[in-house]
Amino acid sequence: MSPWTGSVLFSLLTTMPLSDTPPRELPPTTTVAPRFSSPPRLLPPNPIAPLATKAVVRTDVPTIARVLVAIKDRNWTVTSGEFRRQHLIPLVGFRAGECHFIRVMIESASGMVTTSPETLEFDAAPLPAHFPSIDTTVMDPTRQEPGLTMFCAQPGLAQNLDNVVIMVDTTGSVIWFYDNPEFRPFHVTKARGGRLLLNDGLLAQEIDFWGTVHGAWFANRRFPDLRPPGAIPVDTDTFHHEFFQLAEGSDADFLALSTEARNMVDYPTDVIDITQTVEMAQVVGDVIVEFRRDGTIVREHCLLDVLDPYRLVYDSLAGFYNGIYGPSFDWSHGNAVTLDPFDGNYVLSLRHQDALVKLDRQSGGLLWILGDPRRWVAPWSDSLLRPLMNQADPLRWPFHQHAPAFVGPGRIVLFDNGNHRAIPPETPMAPEDSFSRVVEYTIDEESQTVRQSWDFGDGSWFSQALGNTDPLPITGNLLVTDGARFRPDGTAFARIFEVTHDESPEIVFEFLVTDQDPEASWTVYRAQRF
Image (cartoon, rainbow, N blue to C red; front, side, top):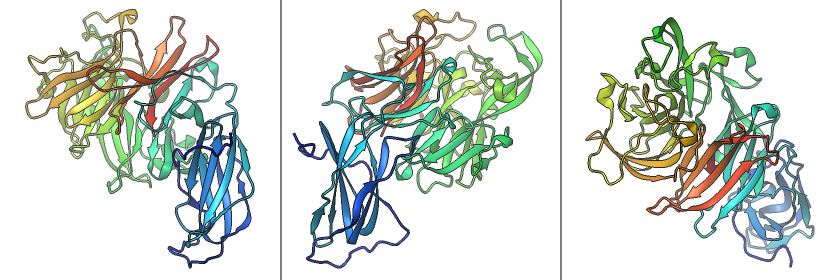
């Protein structure tokens, strides 16, 4: 069967101009078919993003260009957006290790069409030997959210490999990846204009699908000598866990989580017996930072000014940031901040406080706390959300949670990791008994109450770190990153799945990110559907 048999499935991207010449909105019509000024050709891919290329098309009159791509069971077209004589058409979506056939059609303003006689071939690069295995275990195309799933896979430290940004289609097949030995991002998210934002904790880069850097920002306060050439300095300590682009029209361009360290007197050194103290301790707290593309900070809010820095739960004394600050206590460990789409204020996930908190975006003032009420004292206890009495589903508080996201006014879903499931001095739950879940809470801010309105998890899986839950706009399903599934031998794998968000939740798409080597590990912080 010809590779051109079948219908066009979807268009991935639109064209980018080859030159700075302004396009003519409506070129003169002609009854003569347009001609190619030179045979269409493909540009060599960037080695760090080898599953993307660009088609170069030149014509004698202004035309719209269409590039048709086909393999044995799939075909699609990419159409340029304006009448031009020169087109540089980006192409993404090639399956690794397969040969794709490409034809080009041009159309003049009068509707005259010419098809190139040449069939171009693009041999998509095979996956590297060090690449993780992507194993699809569940697939129900009739109920899956359309789109592509992107995530950053992180190897175990002992493997000495690069982090890899990966995009898979609705079958779990790899159709794009970014593998840069000089940059190891752990987080990827969407930016405007079909670009991506990558973040490694100090450096954030805006790239396109061909690996071209269009902007870079560096958390410059602690290690200014490490700032790469061309990166814009931002006067903050870190970019950790969260970095995303704000909506057009905002007074800032980016929002990030950062950190600071302060010296605290008479600080507890034991989370159970808080009477054991040290004269002085360096305590790390999270900082919300909003800044412009030129690095100017628009606003920042410090959690150590908002919450009780002496409230400790399990892991509040961990040394997660010792490599940045020296001996220190990771008191809050913020791992997410999002904006409430209904009032514009912040909601943060604080892993080492076992709590979500909501802050006023302008003043930084505390609006509410969602979490186990133990060890919160006045005045912070006045902001605790109270469980709604007589609810049908018993409320279970989240522990060491990740990634709150809104599915409606006052309705938040999140990934509840479930570490310890206790507040000191209560005995923590043993790891072998621990479990993770996806949970939805419904909050009434006027009455300051909360109820558990939905959850998914049968107690059989436990990710002690990482994790994400993303609502999907078309089906209402949830894309879940079960990001760090540790085996008894200490190795780990990740599971990414899509589950229906209804009374009888079912997994409709699932794949594992693992390795053929049983002694190797791969984990995933977050996945997103594009």
